[in-house]
Image (cartoon, rainbow, N blue to C red; front, side, top):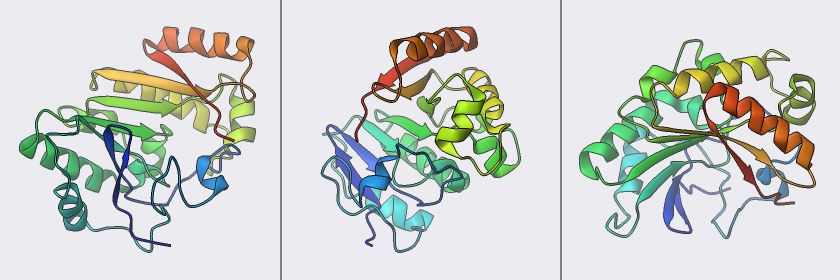
Amino acid sequence: MSQTITYQVKNAVYANITNRCPCACSFCLRNNGATVFGSPDLWLEREPTPEELEESLETWDWTCYGELVFCGYGEPTERLDTLLAASAFMKERHPHVRIRVNTNGLGDLINGKRTAPLFAGKVDALSISLNTDDPEEYFRLCAPKFGPSSHAAMLKFARDAKEFVPDVAMTIVGPPVSDDAKIARARALCDSLGVRLRVRPYEG
């Protein structure tokens, strides 16, 4: 285990603020080991304090990076207050940087309240893991601790979020996890929600 708070993937800086997640997705990258895309070890010894996160963010030359992504080995909305504080910090210090949150969309269940309005003015983009249009398959694939109703809660969050965040996308994993028919159904669902679909490659 290490204490990798921020790391680079391509031309973006990623923030790794927790290892906690209410899901146990069968295709999660962290099942494959301690690193992704050449990153350092992402298993945290402990969760960084808000001050440690800000200090780590300021070690980067933000003239070279246009995006900060909250995405590590856990679900960022497990630490919603820290995420929002860091986003506000970045908007004040580096207003040109786009803020994106990669999330399973279960933040309302995690925090016991409606969370989408809290992202207004702090988060520019959300990438929500749809994974499948079918609630039963979602429960099998992702094993959310909140039970079968998690899929509906995630869709409600996506519908809610588009009112407060400029760019909302939902994602599914492509072949072999999802075939063409499943992708088409997911696209139709996203269209009905007013958000876009992104098919991300399987990293097995």
